[in-house]
Image (cartoon, rainbow, N blue to C red; front, side):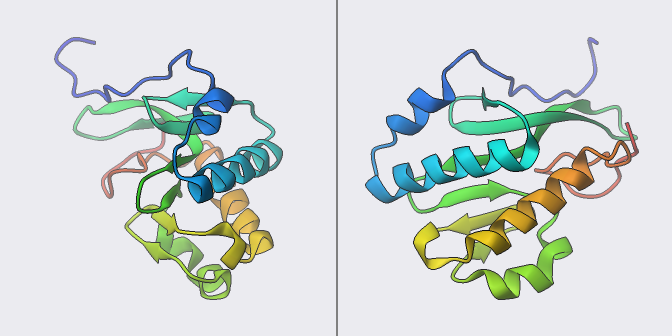
Length: 153
């Protein structure tokens, strides 16, 4: 689709389990292993690497009126230096659950967690389950890193 503004990040053949095992920071590595198991269970999908540092589960297609479209993970996380990032549909959709989660910070669609041992994992699992259900419903057209103006794919 020449001329279309498309997502350039893609799925890779890298092994997500090897990626998690190689995470340098011990807390991030431990948390990544926990999330690998949790997101596999919640989504029923096998983990795959999306770009160099994101572990994704499942996929959805997004399309904007501008012509921008692509595919993105339906659920994902990335163990970053400062915190582990869990990617959601929209943080504001989970306000009530986030109040019960424990220590965290948020962005528009990102949930930042420094230590999973300090949060309620059952609440986190419910947040991920709801976000995954939303983006895989067939009516969600947003890409997680952008907001507004999307149409169902």
